[in-house]
Image (cartoon, rainbow, N blue to C red):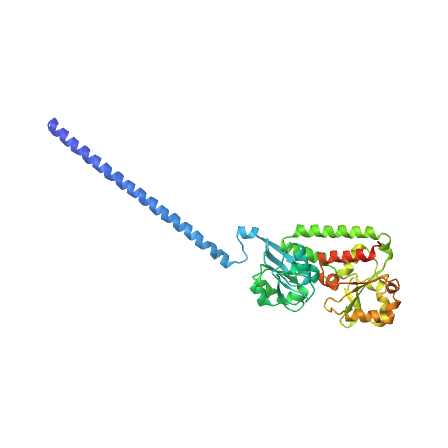
Length: 351
């Protein structure tokens, strides 16, 4: 083969090689793009699959919150167990006067409340706009509560224990052991404050209360240990007294005021007395507590007209003072307690 022919063969081979190289590179680029495409599809399927699985986990176990919801909830121990409550409840329903007093004083205005009728006047206009969900201590209106869409319900076990499961289906429910009438109102206030996320506010309010107690002690001076204070009220159709184991009795005990011997009882909060047993209500001072539910105060008025009434020491010394039962017996929390301290100061401190 001559050089011209050889060059011609080599030239064709070179072009053929270049042509195959170009086709091979194009094929490689196509396969690379295909691999990228399928990889993208695989990643998309993986992400979508993960998103679809998230709700299934929550649906299986409603009690297993996500990390975000965990930080937005707190567990509160109460009379009927433990309850997860929102960190910052916005729509609270309260089922007792003491809870209402606590919530309002802590800066939380409930959307609904079940109360003793006509017993919130001492709270002023702070109750305006609060929906009524029943009259305590009767069972509340569950349908009304549902309509308010609460995120927290607060009540008392001695009244609402039987409704606890139903209430818990509506919203997280926290119940104190009793109503605070037994004098343990501070513990109940602390519990409700925890449920409302207002623990520090409650501590400050109780510190202020203790400071007022100490100031009153100082103002009373020698009277503090020499003045026996009797708490008298009408109970249904008979007269009675409140003991050291009652809401008002616990406040007098904080101040250090002596009580008549018959009223020094911590195991009961109140007791009825017969006409023949008027000595049990005798004291240097008598606070006549108007019945919060009986505006006519019939029993107390009858008591004041009884001839035996004039034989009591407080009557002889003209130291019988009529006070508001809505504050002294129904409020059963911090705002009412402060009002009781005001009454004690106004009536007992010598001007």
